[in-house]
Length: 365
Ligand SMILES: Nc1nc2c(ncn2[C@@H]2O[C@H](COP(=O)(O)OP(=O)(O)OP(=O)(O)O)[C@@H](O)[C@H]2O)c(=O)[nH]1
Ligand SMILES: [Zn+2]
Image 1 (cartoon, rainbow, N blue to C red):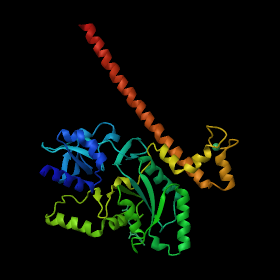
Image 2 (image 1 turned 60 degrees about the vertical axis):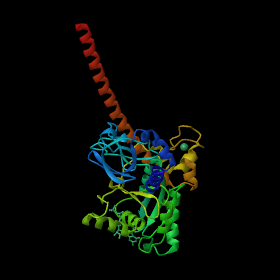
Image 3 (image 1 turned 180 degrees about the vertical axis):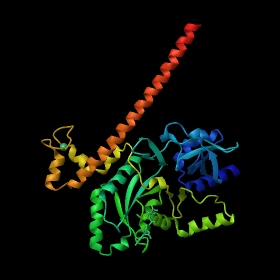
Image 4 (image 1 turned 180 degrees about the horizontal axis):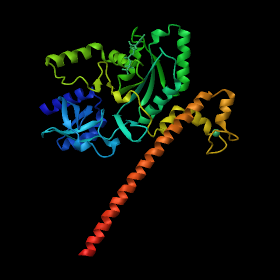
């Protein structure tokens, strides 16, 4: 009886962090080993904070920090924690449903995992500045590539009081973002924040956008400023259970989970060809009508993409932006391949050195 009620209780509390029956089913083999499920709320210096049914615990990440940077445990992962030893260890994490990956730098192109199991990518765009559609497209490519559903939120709508002007801006963004919901919000007047809260109430969301886009303000509106204040106060007087205020993953009071990591705030693409394709889905649809299967849409006869531009059905800016993002992506992929090739060559040298040593040893015997 006791164990029954405590397990249903734990399902409820972890459910606030996104735990569902599918996760529970995948976790079953780990539960059999006596491991405890929890969601990673923060990773740093070989350790991580994991939200379990008993609150946040700190665990070592040595077992989930492989050489491949894309397989390193990250915020949003569902961890299997061995809670009996000291230190506690994360022994494994469940297969990711979605993953945000960025390239670490333009010099040494390597993927870095930023967040896992995200359902909604909320791209915050300020209406206080001129719309940068190319930048929106870049964020959209990253979001689509992750597997999350993007959503564009135009912030500071109070700064565009003319409804016709606002409608025009929304339409501009909508043509830039096929298949994506576009919302307008104002954290100052509160307009639209309820609509956003309803979208993010289901699943896990991240906020993307450049500095000043209004992400922190949106996060506070979703979290309720009081929640943040309470956490801080408790930490100061040491009364509450909150031992860290720099958590990167939070349960929202209206339902849903918010991941807010600084790493997600400005990101380069990493092998996002499929994501780019999704951002420009209308171009890829036109391309299917091109006469040549490998049409580069440059000057080929029978190019349906160029025809669409000529007819005014496809803005030239869109096509330019598409090309730019594809080129950028190809550069990154080429660099990554070069790095992989170098790594393979090194492995091969090591192996053949090993082989020579073995051969020499055998002959010596
Ligand atoms: N007029 C108006 N100003 C807003 C609104 N939301 C945010 N701002 C202002 O915009 C500025 C930037 O907002 P932040 O929320 O800090 O932006 P951010 O995206 O978190 O920026 P970083 O933390 O640098 O990434 C602040 O001065 C806010 O007061 C809004 O709805 N209306
Ligand atoms: Zn073409």
